[in-house]
Image (spheres, rainbow, N blue to C red):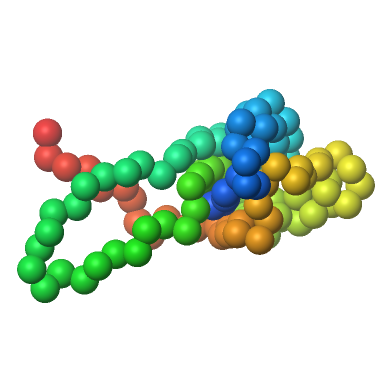
Length: 120
């Protein structure tokens, strides 16, 4: 059983962050979780952290996205994406203009080996 991740990076449409969160939580996540092969969803927001000033270390640009959702898949990512396309086409799933579509980025990630953990 595959445990690929579909990672979707998003931004809210300007001035519509509250609507974006409401739509994502009450409409979009349930729609996506109804697709065969999608077994879980976890939303994230970018966290502001202070990074140490290390001499000669490269500067890192700020992230281009404010939000990310990680969907766990137990079926082939191409099959899941095909089903998304069918549902968007036939109206079973709808997108919303509360999302800034010009900045959306998504991709399916497959694990390389087993998870590793820090020593306890």
